[in-house]
Image (cartoon, rainbow, N blue to C red; front, top):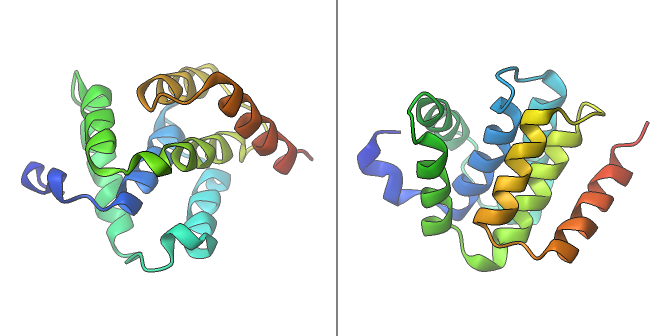
Length: 140
């Protein structure tokens, strides 16, 4: 997605971007994470009218941003600028689900989740509940 289109992100694009960012945070995108992203987009009501073809472009935008020095800050700026506040907790829940998809969280994923909590101003108690639900859904 060219930089001119950054301001044209739909709320669903922002949710996809957050999920992709968590998956790519450790520089190894796992199949279980991709399946979780795809399943979320295919099944959750927030994505009901989402054009799934946009996922590739949004993913490439995240990868391009991660190659830049201040890319993570730019990503959060885009998300905060294009995602309604009512979906901030949804973004965090989706991020937690992607992080938990392979059954364990690594240091990079934990750091990024912490950053997402901070950037989206997720209340600590709400974050703990979201994390607990994600953990419960992904136990083996």
